[in-house]
Image 1 (spheres, one colour):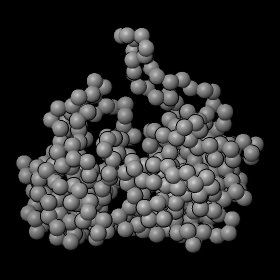
Image 2: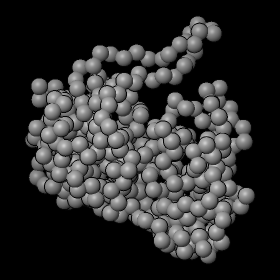
Image 3: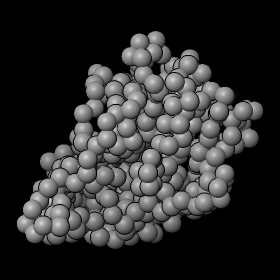
Image 4: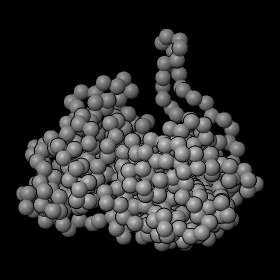
Length: 374
């Protein structure tokens, strides 16, 4: 079935429908990763966006249920060059096309996604429509009516509705060990050494897993949880997760974080970092086309080391807006935007990128703050 991707500036891409049929709108964005399409699609940070993968072949290793970052795809639609009809991974539970249909997620293949990415890089983020039922002219008109991320408090749409203790394991991948034919779970967990409340702004499963691997006993709470209710849980620290939307629109969460500052160590990731920065007195700015991928260079200003990171955000803190006592710890080397902050006086730190692949303690600065505060 024919499908159309229409941008609000009138640009049209034609292709073939994959997944669900119908019409969806959202803000177009692109991700440059060559793998991890399932984790990217199920990342709640993509809520309200039409996601284009610049790598040409998607779906070649299928869908593995245990790799989901949330329970279902979060992007409004996916745009790809080619969907693999066969998947090769022995871990796969189903083909990607079937999975998209099962979750009523539309998509379009046959699109030159690198051309699309270049168009967005030059012209900036814009609204879009993916449809199997509208004409090109109708699709452009629908795209112009779509919502932008500006002013959208989308964390309230993806947060958990009730608090829960996360009881995951280190990583339930069944991998062959050195004994032929013996399949065993990989990795063991050290005992938890501290209690952390994770405020769910759109938290990923891998982030929860990483916190637990770092020795944190994690209780996840809704984004609307008050400072008093968080303190009543008697945590050693508070973690603000990544998530979707405009950080400045989350006024209730900003007020909660401001009330918690100085009472407990706080760490923010992605949207959580931006909200933390606002609570500390800074402001955010909209990036022209955002940072998304698995290959963004971020420089640690203290060591000079450059890390290849996996960010996913449309907004960033303005360095010149940060008050005295709040330091920039990392910068994105593609545009020199803020990629990390720290406020030692308030025991608060944040990163704009996903640090799951670091050696040793992923959230080492946060853990050090917790140990100092005890």
